[in-house]
Length: 189
Image (cartoon, rainbow, N blue to C red; front, top):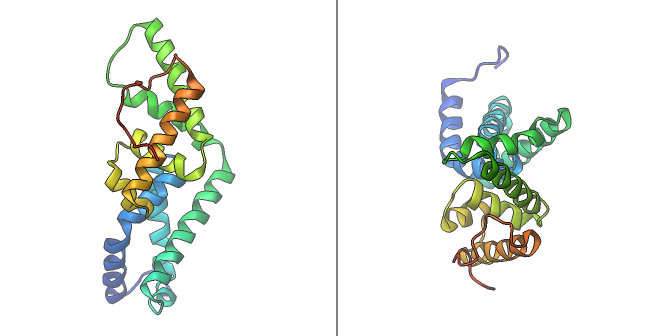
């Protein structure tokens, strides 16, 4: 491995490890990247590149230890990227603009953009678990069962977090909000 290449056997083992862990790691990356799927993909790729470099050591670890190592590595990479610049803070409004489906008149568009910005600012201020659930549900359009799997919690816990997050949004945003009052998302605790 002195020239940076790994053996065929190591590559096969690393590929199997990737297949087993990449989905969960991507969900974790989405949380750390505040919903930026491209950034989450980059974080997963960087974490597995590091795993490739450290594979002789990782190979001897138990499966759970390797997963923990991978999550810590991904988190460290995410923190390093945050320290290098403010690029991630600027992406949320651009993502919202790109995901808009309907063209609106200028007045409506201005009102909608301002409301959504207030909404996301309120979500960003939520406790970590509520933020993660809200982000995965409302930004990434994941179902409650998928969120429960990604975050390692029960479906009822996800539902409760959604209910509380929605109540906070309604309380903080008042009558000028994009959250409909009759929605059934989440269940009361």
